[in-house]
Image 1: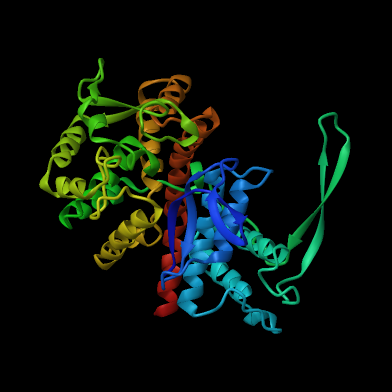
Image 2: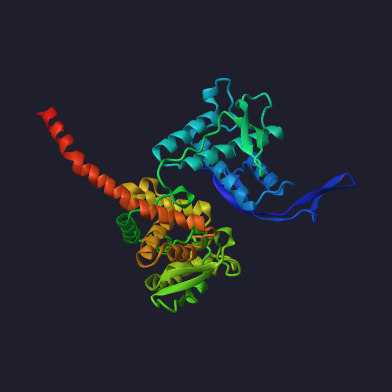
Length: 421
């Protein structure tokens, strides 16, 4: 399976002296930390994809490293699929349905239909692949005569700030996958929460399986709403220095965001609210022999981190996904069917819905939204209001379902029994 790695890129330039070429550090170009690079299962780099990543980051238009990383993650998924079906990415036979990129589009649509891939992810993944092929075409990395796909011109109509209608012509590929989301209210990032009994069952299962790291990471997600980028950058000192809340001593607070060394989305500053019992578990784990062995293998810069892999490295996208894949495989084997489409970010949605339910029970909407917004480190209040709407709609759906069952179940069951008589 192809892998995604992150490197520190130092730019060099060639210098010719006495007909000899030597490479020197290019002081005019900036180094790039954590530049995403794709490697095939053989260990060989995917040169063309890695050239695209470097070009995106260093382009004059500017490419934020997080945006480029997101694109390369999608391309890494394509690389893994190519290896699984043993196809070359430049496979463009005359028959359209046999082309690698067309077959991959069909695979994404199949996954979307099964619910194992969100519509937004399928859309973004295909868009990233198309962007890469356009780059490869421009730089002559593929045969210019290869029949990749057909482009079409799409006219987009919009109104400017003073109300005049304008039109914009853009190029669209026939391979693009529309982002057709499923019906129903979705929370941030398009996910829904776990049922309470499923969340409890998941935590118990991870603990029973002695999956110590994933058990604690899941606990932090479900009980604090922290994102994975926040959890994986928590340090031992952050746990040691957690302070009890002045009004609720059984709740501890951990500062996160700029200046703390703990990452947050959009660099929002705030505090995680962590139950006292979880703080105690985290402190116990921090000085366990299991973690100390990992710390002994870590570099000086990473020893501070609470969670480290067996090789002493920070949890990155690839290593954490492997951890989740192992958990999902075990849980499905134990009959936990809801784990088939489980995403870690659902832990955040689970915490948010529970927190909003409790907050609305004891306070008005305005106070509840303000409290949940701070607790979940939301940058925009509109995101928090999604949890209010979700909470308000749940009893309505339950009431409708109960009414329909009460009115029609007897009729349907009676007719069905007569049919089989």
